[in-house]
Every structure is written in C-alpha cells, then in structure tokens.
Length: 347
Image (cartoon, rainbow, N blue to C red):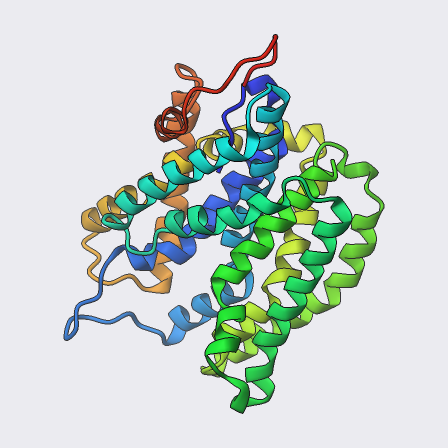
C-alpha cells in the first residue's frame, strides 16, 4: 500500500510497479469474485481455458501479490522513517496504521472473501522488531527465513511423507508475504530504491536467480498441462526467485525517465492502490453481470482484467486532477491519526 506523502516526495517507480502489480492480481482474483454454488455451473479447464490457465500459473499466480507485498515492506520503511524524522514515534504510528488497515480489511472480507488486507495487517506486525535492526541482521534473518520456506516447500514434493502441518506452516502464502515484506523493508532501508542503478549486487543477484526462475516457470508449465496435483507447491517453490527477477527488471526499466513518463497513467493507479484494490471487486461484478457471465473461465479473465484496469487508469487519472489522495487512502490516514509535526518536515 502507498504511504501518505506529497507528489514531490513520491518515488515514481514504486507507484508504477504497484499499479502493474494490481493489474496482475486481477488475473487471480476475478474468478474469486463470484462464489461457486454446489450443483451450479463449474469453470471449464479444458482446451483454450486450460492453456490460458497454465500461462497464468507460469507468469502471474503468486508473483504479483508477492510484488505487492514487497512494496508494502518498502512503504513501511518510508512511512516509519519519515515519522521518526518528524520527531514522531515510528513504530507506534505504524501500529495504528496496521490496526486501521485491519479494520478496513475486516469490512472488505464481507465484500470479497479473498481479501488480503487482514493478512497484510496481521503479518505487518512482524516487521516492527526489524525497524531498528542493522542491515546485516535483517539480511541474515531474510536468508534464513527464505531457506526454511524453500526447504518446507520442497520436502513434500520430493519426500511425500514429510507433508505435514509443520511444513505447511512454513510453506504457505503467509510466509511468502512476510518474506516479501522483509525484502522490501531491507531494500528500502539499504537505500537501493533511490539509487537502483548504483547497486552492483542486483546484476549478480539477477544472473544467479535467472536460471532458477526460468527452470521454475518451465516446471510450472509442464505440471499445469499435466494436471499435476502438486502444481500449487511447485508454484510456491519458484515464487521468490521469479518475483525477485520481476522486481529487478521492473526497477531497471523504471529508472529510465522516459519509461516513467510513459507509464504515468499506471502510476496514478498505484498511487491509490488501496482504493483501486477494493474497487476491483465492484467493477468486476458489474462487468460480469453486464456480460451475463455465470461462471468465470480463464478466457473470460483475460478479457475482464484489462477492461477493469483501463477503467481504473481512466478514473485515477481524472481523479488526481482534482484531488491529492485517494478516498480510501484518506480514510486510512484519518484512522491512523494526525501525524506529529516537527519543524518544517511534513508528510
């Protein structure tokens, strides 16, 4: 989610990537906006629908909500560090922000059962102990957590007897979310976001991760086409390397001023990510009703998702001609409480 900062303070690449992450999330969420009824029509997973579903599994599933989670971690550091610069209490301020998000998320669950907002709020509390930690400490924790996550995910794939409650805890999506939260926090604290071209480690990291990312995507494709019952675990196993590669490429691209200028409409969507995330379910249901779609197939998703995103781009561009902050962002800020002002530093 975006932090409450003025347009001049915003890092444009973050808004653009957040906007594209919202677009990717649509491809996963659209099918969940309609509740399937037992005995009613079921989605078709054959022919072109199967192929499209396999492609979504390869390129989208788990990757874009992980990118979104990474940006939440980035936002935590930006929000907390600016609060501290004002003379405010950064962790206390962020706790209030998380509680506000939790309340918004609880309401949103009644609209869309697959809402991630409650999970974000709860898992976000785990970032608090890391705020004052050194970069070395954060890096070591991150490496350790990723290692545990990968082992817990891989073991049941190769040794079925190890598939248990314990391995499921460390291999589930909540662990993925926390890994990406902490990754975003680390990158932001290290100052990489503002100086992405100067970070030499990224090229080495990308080269090292690329073979694993490509291999993972090929494995997902063949598993999806073969209707492998372990396809979700296979996707989870490859999510971290693929998402890191996606993010590195995205930051490289959007360190170019021309790319940033061309993608300003998408940046507007990302600038009010909370508003647009919640609005997606309403827009999707309206479109599906207008198209008389009783059950969502994969071929419907690739039509509806771009339609929703175009609507949100148009709305966001027009909205920011008159307002400085999205409606849900404004509510979230109000629920968080008025920030303390020290000197001339403001948010």
